[in-house]
Length: 481
Image (cartoon, rainbow, N blue to C red; front, side, top):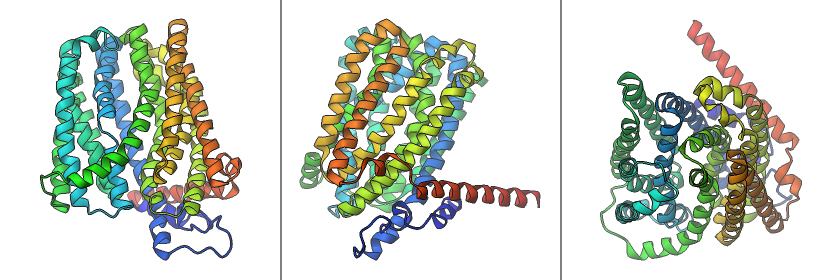
């Protein structure tokens, strides 16, 4: 993490996110030294998390290229749908306990052992119930949103449901405790094993769709066992529910739960609707475009992951300043990335995935626009959740979801996957503008503080770039020496 630490040391003065909560603070307002020390690591943790995500995205792209070239468009679409299904089920089932875990540890000062015990047991119980329900309802699913998907393929992915629940709960706890190193190592190792598995079975052994699905199920089993052992060594929790704590967590979590469900469906409903109106081949094309554009969404996701536990422990004035700064800087990065991706993305798709996937380049511009706007939404929701005002996120999310699905019902039959991208871009923009309005009203900050980069932001990225180039040269010299 030395590169990220260097970036923090070179952050410009007056930067809220980089160790000076007083950056935009009125004269005379003091901040506790503990807050300053805690915020000083924000940039380091953000870049550590995002650096890991960049590596895992690179590995994920390799896995995507392998599955695309060796499975073909139709089976690649089936693979994308069955891989998405457990994530959707988990989104409906986890009841906001991940967010409640962060809030319990950071805001209510509950001991980690109590939170971990509830998280582990709830992941097993909820996951088991969801598997049973999915098996019972498999006929209806395979006849509608999963039409064209073999039954065996759907059933093979169901063990991912309790695994994803476990990961969601435990990673939130690591997030609350600032254990981003453990999170990043697990993410990187797990993605590496997925790529190795695909190379071994698809490329080396010439296996097909069944082997690809088994790889994405077996690797999380191994990694989650390692995560469980590691966490239990650090926090020796019991295997008994703390019902009093669980009751408080559910009351808080259900507010976030509705928000998370709406956001997930806002991001993923279009894939199911593309399959419903079209077929798995078109899902494969659309999935490639979305996954490529979502490289940009990892910027606000990384910032938000580090930002949320810090916001939950700050006073509202500092919280708003920190959120506004994060929005400005994230918007600057994602907008630049969207422009580049829109220009070179179609060529990269053909180069990496093959000429058969060329149609994936058609919706890329609109998908990129939507992702840029969604990045603002992701960060602002962390602010409202930290203040226990999830009702704002819920209202915005429900409006956006309704508009997205409504638009998709007309645009997909008429325009195919380009229509799906258009519907997403419009709804993402609407929800971002709605949350910006609520945030500006609560914070009293002008819109320019949220949307327009300031000189200090440009200096921050310039200084960061200089530092990274310098460290790269030092590393090259050491290798040469």
